[in-house]
Length: 474
Image 1: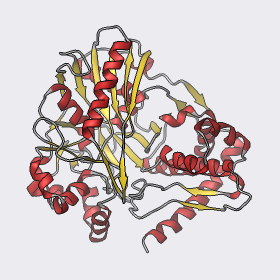
Image 2: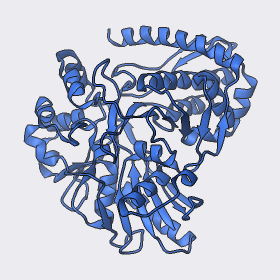
Image 3: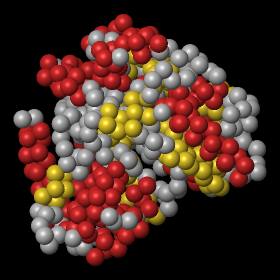
Image 4: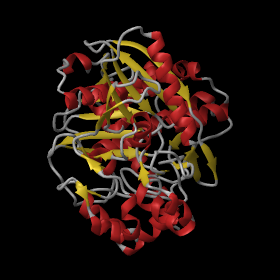
């Protein structure tokens, strides 16, 4: 069997596949997030322990030898480790907002734009540049004690294998990597005031690093590959590799990705270019901060259970009786398709007659509008695949197709883990039938009348957003 490991923000998963791409089994374990006053951190030992636990459960459930393992996981954040890959402090999550004042300053003095023009990366508070700069100012002893500032999957890879600290071009893409040379841009490191911390940046392994496991979770000697991280891994798992094709990941993060061979560092600085395993091929990424997390907050606040969502969406008409939601709930603001650290969610049109269904539909519509904005900014021209936890709601998928005004190739299952296996197989020279591995589960067509309604609603969304962004800067 082939094993894909996906170390997510709130859930760690491991999936087993046969040689045809059929998913045999999945094991998962939740992991905690410590949120307080804009700070979002994770316990690295808890995360690594969850990885070992799901792998042990998976290999016990499927009584077949492990041919190969691929590893992916959440990107960004700062995971400070010692020489053995063990934590020197809790991991700072990509959701962390403590460095927003640094980003505000860099936006004002031109540093933000200068970095984008060199790397194609629009920094946000939870990416390594601002976080490392914040830690250098406020927790220098933690940086002094660290051997490397890694990303999530890199810490797991080092612990599973004992290999030296390393990362890959996909994770390194934000914010220090020059996408043309596929190496760190030392001038960017200097611009962020981190030249004296340059040694913390792990060497970039290009192509992705490989090693053999030491026996925790997987049998000793199992071949494993480190990367790419979850966004490009999902693109591989969904078969999005041709220029113009796109992927929408409806997960904790609402991520829009478009494959491209063109590197355009002009225009409004936003999103990033993710370098892939093929030089000259990138993913233009617009990873919005909040996806299903926005809906989860509304559901918990209104007391609606997840299994009630489809029924409420079916009962409530398009437009949600005038209720509108700007779904920017993240404590660190928004990062795509624009950067606005102080932007917050807004609910309008609510009155005593508004129902729970109105709030749920308006939130789903707002997320759809945000997705459309991101996909347009990323340059979508081809087919669109969609994956993530949101695909479990058939009613939401129909709503998304209508809001986006285009068919959706729904790819279900553990798409990131699937992509990690495909990347590992490529790295090890194992031939797998990629079209069979990435075949969509269904295709959802938009309704023409509803699509026309939402086209007008999208323009209204952009107007409301412009006003909210102006207020956020006051």
